[in-house]
Each structure stands twice: as C-alpha cells, then as structure tokens.
Amino acid sequence: MKRTETVIVGGGQAGLATSYYLTQQGREHVVLEQAAQPGNAWRNGRWDSFTLVTPNWALMMPGATYDGPDRDGFMPRDEVVAYFERYAQQFNLPVQYNTSVISVEPMDARGYQVQTTDGTFEADNVVIATGFEQSPRIPAFAAAISPDITQIHSSAYRNPESLPAGAVLVVGSAQSGSQIAEELYQSGRQVFLSTGSAGRAPRHYRGKDVFEWLYIVGFFDIPGDKFPIPLDHFAAPHLSGKNGGHTLSLHQFARDGVTLLGHLRGAAKDKVLLAPDLHENLAKADGFEAMAQKMIDGYIQAKGLDLPPEDLPQLRDGYEQPIIEELDLKAADINTIIWATGYNFDYGLVKLPVLDQNGIPIQTRGVTGHPGLYFVGMPFMPSLKTGTLAGVGEAARHVASSIVEAYAYR
Image (cartoon, rainbow, N blue to C red; front, side, top):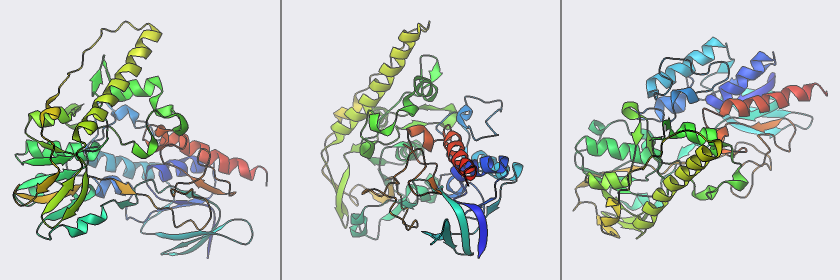
C-alpha cells in the first residue's frame, strides 16, 4: 500500500497542469499515466499532418505559456508532443508512467483507495484528469458492414497512403472529419462526407484569427447553462491550422468534388442508409458562422474599434448536391470508412455517486460534493474554455488551490 496526499489520474494537459500547481505549493502527490510518455492523446490519436487548430499563443500551460517566434502559427503534432515531454521534465513533475487506474473508492475513514495495475494507493485527494475522450465512438451498426470494407476511427488515421485504394467515406464533419476529408480529396482520393451539425467559422476575420476574436469577446467563458447551442448538439466548428491556417467550408468541398451526405443512420453489408438532412446540416454550419460574425461585429462596434468591415464568401454549392438516402459502397468504389464520430467518456472507475444521468460529473468548477474528489480538464466546467489549452491552466489552478486550502482547516 502506497500513501500520498493526492493522486492525479491522467498525465495529459490537465493532469500536468494540476501537478504543476501542487508542485509549486510543495504538496505531495503523484500523477498516474497509463501510457509510457506524456501527451499520449496527441502522440497516438492524431494523424501525421495534424496541427493545432488554436493559434500557438493559446498554448497557456502554467509556467510555460508559448513565447516562440510564431505567435499566430499552428503547432504541428510532433512539436506538441515534444512540448509536453519538456513540460514534465522542466518542472520535475512526479509522473508515474505505465500505470492504469482500475478504480477509485472511498475508504471507511477520510480519503480514497486507488487501485492500479501497479498496486494500491491511499490518498486524501483524487483528481480525475482523464478528459472526455476515453474510447473511440463507433455506432453499433458498423458491425453489419461487409468485412471487405476497411473501417477505422479517426484516431487511427495517419495519412492517405496508409489506406486501401479507392474512394473513402468519412463519417462526421467536425474538426477531425473535415480536416481528414480535405487531406484525402487533395491527395486525389474520391471522398464521400457524411455531415453532422458542426458549425463553420472563418479562420480569419477583420484582422484577427477567429479564435482570438472569440476569446476576446468571451465566447469561451459562457457557462454551460447559458451557452447558445444545446450542449448535447455542440461539436467544435471545422477549422484547419494546416499550411498557416485556413477556413474549411463544406460548400468549397462540394465545389472541389466531394460528395456531401446527411448523417448515417444504418448499414447492412455493402449499403449504408442516410438521413435526408444534408441541407439542414449545411444551414447549421452557415448559421454558426453568422453567429460568430455577429458577435465579433457587435464587439467591434461596442468598443468603437476602427476596423474595416469584411464580407465573408457566401458559397452555396453544397445545397446544389442531391439528397442521397442509400449509398452502395461497392458501386461507389468505397473501400474505406473513417469514423470521425468522436469519443465516449467513461468515469466508471470512480465508485461513488458523483455522476448525473448522462454520466457527467456533478461538480462546481471541478470540485465535487465528496471531500477530496475533483475533476479537471473537461469542457463546461463551467465553460468551454476549461477543456482547452487556453483554459486548462485556470481550471487546474482552482482545483489545486482547493486542495491546498483544505489542508489549512485540518
């Protein structure tokens, strides 16, 4: 039995940020990470040409905010991985690798028992920093698709050359799906894209990157209960940081030869069934851009900023595509399906009544009603920012401060 004040479960950005603050305060703790190195989600869950979709300046990990020469650039995958490796080393964070947490249970007295693949820990506090991406989400009906069709989740995609010859069906049009679809069709592949409700945002608008504008106007600080889009329908808008960053538009995809589809609703052998909601999905993408534009324009006007107006392209090509409700994969020469359908989250390792009916932690800014149990690094705790590189440090500071302050009253 190993004893420590605090166990942090997860050595990604949230766990490392929390460890940084506890280290600065001299509080005893250990970070348990199941992978062999830090930054595993960036290392193994992203394709070869991946870059951040947020500008480099938004990398705000505590103690190591980006200060390089390319403030408005977009860091590629390998640089992101190297950054987290340096981060753990620079601050001498107590990370124990190759250790998976099996369960977190309350002890009869104060504190928690943490069962791991490397023995059991006793701790006064446990911080769950595993994020929202525990396992790839693939619909059950995928099992009914012919075994002749290669199926992979977007987390396993690496490059066009790694896929079988032929056309590709990409399912999902949020950030990963839209970026992968663009890379595939630009490499010469015929692409079919099953769209969802993700919005579109202009990469640049009225002199700034759109992320910087939305950060300034407070979009990322809107609490979940006041967020303008239902949380169960929100998906990160499609954007790209590749080649210096650019706007992704489903209408441009259609103009470039991509076949746009509604969302998948079933499959059997060589056929997939599609909802007739392509135009509705396009309207949602267009609507998000209009909402972002309105927020930014309103801020500029309210602050009296002397910035020239800008008209965004008003493409409509996607609406000209026919509505397809059944697609024959073989007839379309589709040999690969990429499921860019996001991830499932699972906090079942916490053996306490701390989750709501949707499996989401019940907490206030990461602090639960169970003394010593915390969550950090997830979006909408309380705002979208707490799940981003720009806001994870702020969330981690609050959780670490809550831990430190609790000892003052013991």
